[in-house]
Image (cartoon, rainbow, N blue to C red; front, side, top):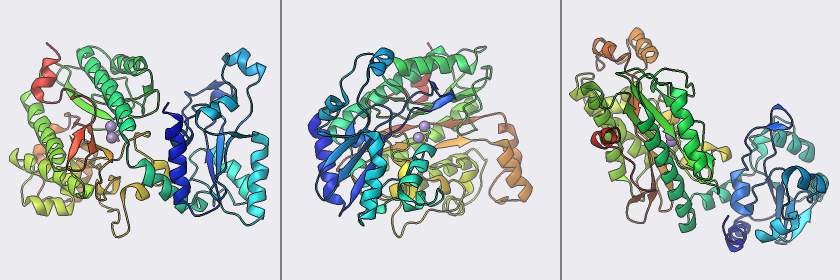
Length: 461
Ligand code: GLY
Ligand code: MN
Ligand code: MN
């Protein structure tokens, strides 16, 4: 947790950015996995954590922008809580820790919102992503369930984005920590890899390392020999000699700042020649984007740098033929990299995406493309000092997609479909790092994690 002053000054800044009304923050509830009391791992809402810091289920908060008053909404600790969950500070003490004096019992929240609305005041809320919040907002605001998301306050959304997008020094310390734990997860995974093991054995090592870092996973583990499936959460394959393993996983710290790292390594101790060729293109794409990072550059242009590098590399291998710029403009490289080159990261692995992807990564005059690959680019606008983002180019051979395009005769003048048949069993390569944009360039978050072919192979000696 940060100091009391950090939370109080974040809220003071927020108050100065919203014109009037009440700001409503809904913390998360416990959620039953197979019955009410057997719950999923609890994860507090990140915006609630950012302004109020309390990592506890069943809370909400209100800020009255005009009077400046602040309330933590929740019920005081009972003896039952102590019996089942142990002794703990009172809610009043917890609120005081983050600089809030007033407590509002949960049972009074609905009436407070309804009273405010009935006197013509605005109650600003953020787009809910949990059904129980949608239901509560429906009950309190008299908006239909279908309407709730569209009635979220744009002014509130943009004020939050304008604060959370710029990471402070104390947040960067947490993000360095998150990436360092994530790096250790990767090193342990690469060292634990041997032919004959199963993916779930490596996934277990990875999860254990995240927990050993004091936090937990920042998102479900992606770890597979079928790396061509972008978000592959299946871990039942046997690691066969000759295959690659793609691992995309990261930790979040106890304070809930995330790392998001991808490495790709061979099941065997060394890469084959064919694997090295593809790996080096992806590494070049990763480094070319990193070298271009600076305030003012559009991240869309960084995406295009990665597509250009991939296109050039595959041309050199004889898998593509034609003018690079022409192929990039048409979206030909999407066959091999059908995702965006990166996204903002912070307390959420895809930071603030619950507030609306386009509000985070786009702006007026910069519309999201509908092209395969570009349509999944979550951050396209100009980079600014204080942004933290991921750089994650890849090359994948997705037989189903290749066959679809070939069947359609799509881009057949550029794509050497016959040669691609040799790569149907290849899988995929992605290399992902996290960087902070500085006033004159960019800085790696965390310590370097083995990334070159030689560095990866050296982990297996
Ligand atoms: N970890 C998912 C992603 O890279 O966006
Ligand atoms: Mn990732
Ligand atoms: Mn990512």
